[in-house]
Image (cartoon, rainbow, N blue to C red; front, side, top):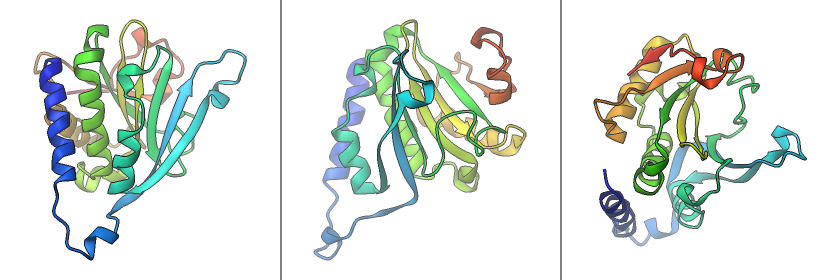
Length: 211
């Protein structure tokens, strides 16, 4: 997918959202999401503890609030290397140690550095829509949140789940990701358990599942 196609798709999504015709009563009613979500921002400061670098930006629980935040938040591709965005269910922190994360893992998508300005923003938005739109059906309760890591050598996108041994849910989530994100067949996405990632370097972690 090239930059023009990605930009066009994003414009079409925003146009569709803005052109929905509402009745007079609906204009005054916000449309609630199934869950409340919290946006986190991480920026590395070596003079602080890691957890202190990860701060809450805001929380949202309606479609309208989501689009307001998305449209007025800096795009992921504009963040400097070393920064992250995370969107997690309210009450869950974007860290392995959180009780609702520690037994889980993540589907991981690695992007080349050249993809940052052609693919990253489009796929991040699609992941957000999957997350808040309950695209994972009855397996959505397994999802804790999503993360985008901006790094010098290449960016990473992850979907975090609660239980790394819940194979049916994990594989279903992986299939939905491949379809919605239009991941090329030549590209493999892998699922890694947090327990493995926390004890090994990234290049040595083996995927529990692949899609």
